[in-house]
Amino acid sequence: MSVTASAGSDEPLTTILAKHTAWRPIAAHHVKLSAGDIEVVVTDNAPWPPHHRGRYNGIASLAHKAEPRNLFVPAYAGLNMEHILDGTETRGGPDPLFEPRECPIQLRRISDHSVEMYQAPTSHKGLESAMRFTLVPPHYIDVVYECIPRRAAFDNGYVVIFWAAYINAPSNRAIYFLGREEGERSGERWVEAATPAHGRLSTHRSVADPCPLPPVPGHPLTLVFNFSKRRYTHPFYYGRYHDMVYQVMFDDPKRVRFSQSPTGGGATNPAWDWQFVIRDYKVGKLYRLRARVAYKKFVSPDDCLSEYRRWRQELR
Image (cartoon, rainbow, N blue to C red; front, side, top):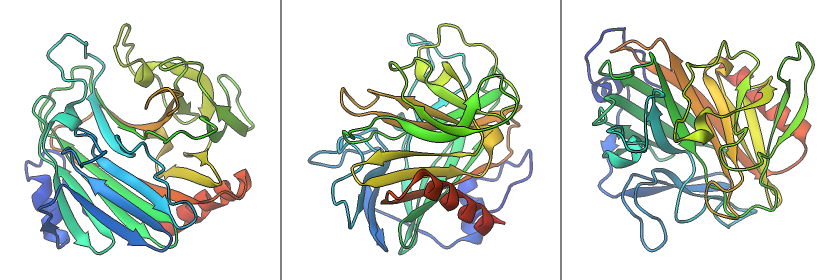
């Protein structure tokens, strides 16, 4: 894992990482990794014939020995870095709504089981980032995301980075998490979050989320800024895919939000998404988020809670 740069540092993120981790560039636009029961294909923004479209970085394919079908829509991706936002964007304005997809990404080999996507400061917002995927047997993907704002280009004082996961026609489009209704001061129960339509009641905040970001009326990305009346109590969610469970866990509930769309990847393909929120950002400061993806046979909701607790213990 890389180290944190000091605030105000203008040292490139690629240099920071190189000092502490040996890596080599990957000439191809996608790379396959396998460990334990899972196999993934990590890709940059280039198309991957014959099915994968360009502009969809992240994990193009996730398969398991018990479920060989790709969890993600083959034309799109999962853990797809999609948006860099500050709430001022308009559909007809100068801000590209899908900036991470438009800018080049370099794939870097860390080890046989670990690959990193590096993106130099983006053309409009100037956000430099690196996202590392490490397979951990038998069925985990450990994720470390790091970024440095290189310019004072976020007019509302905050940064939202948004990832999409387009799920390949599951029978159940909902995500599940432990939480409670807005305004309740205690208690928790399993919430089935199946939003009524794309961009309606779509984003779920933590009970530890300190406050809403400044209002963004009329923002074109309703999926990101339209909040539900439910708050989660533990920073993880899961979704069902046939006999499998896809679970995503995070290390910081104050800065993570879940988003769900019943049709984000097409009429039969929901989106099970998440956001990383950086408040009061500082130019030159490195910010980090850690996550773990578990993809395995579904056992029970309580088993998903146990997975999260085990991972948190590992982090400590």
